[in-house]
Length: 488
Ligand SMILES: Cc1cc2nc3c(=O)[nH]c(=O)nc-3n(C[C@H](O)[C@H](O)[C@H](O)COP(=O)(O)OP(=O)(O)OC[C@H]3O[C@@H](n4cnc5c(N)ncnc54)[C@H](O)[C@@H]3O)c2cc1C
Image (tube, rainbow, N blue to C red; front, side):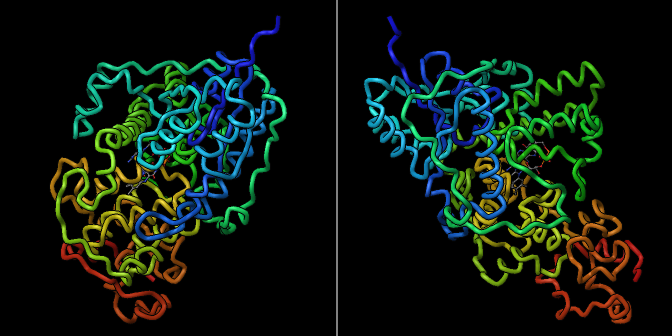
């Protein structure tokens, strides 16, 4: 006698991979048929919450389409497919259940998220689909159930969190995936992957000055992981190079693939452990894990504080008089503040959708501490522009920079001039992204407004005309004026 048909719909969202995918593995193990589903949710292609920037900017959209295309191919190779729909997941899932017959659909599976919009989708599926829902925790290195405290007791200081999980929580092994997936239920059309235009987006500009050519999807993600570890040994020098600004290998560049879920943090962890046992184990190899624990931390912070992470007062409930000056904000976002280190980073972001961690910390500090602008302007601009936007990491870091998050230090503020000179002493990064300043040689380019008229004119710069005068000059910057000789 044929066994009863048991169909699982596996909803994929920010877990767009085959490896280490428990929601998919569970569905495959427990049901006769599996329907892997991705929905292009129209809400992701509208505007951001307060300021109506495109919620999925063109750089991320391009990578999302590549990611979904790659996952479809992988699933096809496994004997299945990725069913693609354009619609709200809670509506699409209900329609599919009706179409297949609720008596045949035994379960909907998915990885749980922690932030409001995503959790609302999950609750709507639970209410509307009429079938059992099986959820999994799959976005972090440390499993929520393995934390040595309840999420509400999460320490508010990162170091305390890190020490406790490192001391008391295991990192689980990756989920062993089947070689082949169970078949799709019959009569379900795969659905076309929409184009950029159909999603109302715009083609992303291409700029060969970017750190690297990013390509979405698990296939390239796994190649990048192998390259960074066994291919180039870059992981063995990460701690020394990670504050770089130019090029592919100063840092891992895993963030975009992690954000789409094309790369599992656990898989990275176990590959680093393998690298450590086969090649070398040092501070650098550990430091990549240290940074991945930051990523975990911000997800657990979001779980603990819920919508407070989006509120003006942040998780500290601190009232600060933030400004919403449109001109200042536009100067920041367009890379026209007249402060070269800020402008170069903001132009890189606009041109490529990526910015180094060093850059992000500086431009966030500049927006919140020097310009004193509403931090949510910056967070929503990043949300729109970043190829690796991850709601927990983005908002957690912005709160941290704005002094209303998890930074135990009071009033931490970056000095744009010192930072520029420390991390780009010769000014190469500035000249790469600000061609107007290409004629200014050496590190003095970081303080171009301090140059004399003669030097400026030899360099072909006319302040206020070819390049803006600084919108603000912080008093502490002057300590670093003249640290690099003026050269043209
Ligand atoms: C204002 C601001 C906003 C940010 N927004 C995001 C975001 O939306 N998405 C995102 O993934 N990261 C964000 N970051 C964190 C960090 O800048 C990026 O993860 C990193 O620059 C990505 O490059 P990488 O993969 O080469 O990082 P690496 O230096 O190679 O680090 C390895 C991995 O560790 C994690 N990581 C490193 N630093 C952080 C951090 N500070 N917080 C959380 N995780 C970290 C990332 O997953 C990263 O891929 C933000 C930082 C700031 C200051």
